[in-house]
Length: 262
Image (cartoon, rainbow, N blue to C red; front, top):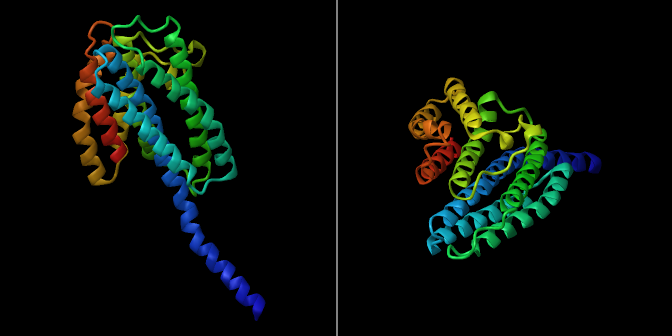
């Protein structure tokens, strides 16, 4: 009887724990997605701070981005993760520290001071890339822990807000500090694609997403978000001759947020 009672308790405990274990990867996926968006949003706002006179309110916006990024990482650390995901979390800390330090260092340059060091773009590109790759490694471990794979529309919704915000970061970098350096040998990754190439890819993914969403409310939200994309898309294609960074930054940020809410 005692053994039966013990087995019943064990079974009950597993039943109670199972929803929590299933919920953890979903919540962590949302947090790692938001963290990736915040990496690129802090970059976008940093480049605008540099190019628009370095006003205190612009600096505060960048600091707020970094604060939110730190909150997402802290929330991830509090999740019930698998051993492999926990290891990926540990490997995330060094690139996060390096990226945050470089952003804060760049904020310290006043507009009246000499231009950023000639190697800035290389250093910044490397720091940003290494942090994003570390976040993607964690994301892959979280995806493996899901009870079932994401659908096609869910996969797009996981990546599209990040790509949209990255487009804004690349665009504002080109306008204010020079383009982010890319790796020509890794063109399959969105980080290393030219702005117009990535913009065309995102345009195709948004069109596919519109055909994949079956939830009426989500479809309506997407249709309300798409006009922003249609407004900035031609500017992203014509980025060499038609630089309007503040317009792209504002609409890309709002579009990314709307896609996150889907």
